[in-house]
Amino acid sequence: MKVGDLVTLSEYGTSLEALWYVTDLARKGELVGMVVEIFESDKPWESGTFYQVRWMGTKYKNLCRGRWQRPGRFKRKDLKMYKKPKDKK
Image (cartoon, rainbow, N blue to C red; front, side, top):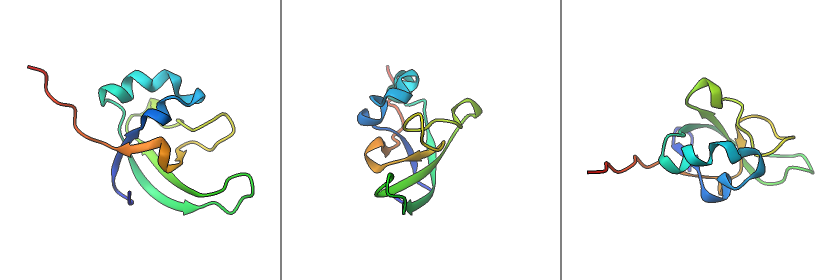
């Protein structure tokens, strides 16, 4: 995953407690965001690589992993590459 990629929440991401209300949108392919920054956290309570995501739509701009996380900050396992939903015929 790199800066500029379109992403949505993975199955793991939709199961996070703070994101229960967008689970159906993510599964339908209606929740889309763009990776705007990738960085390593130097804080002892936040280890690993984080992806800063800007979600499409103003009501989703404050999505975050948990209650104490900053908006738009996700780990790799929370995200997956966005694929356009298949047309139903």
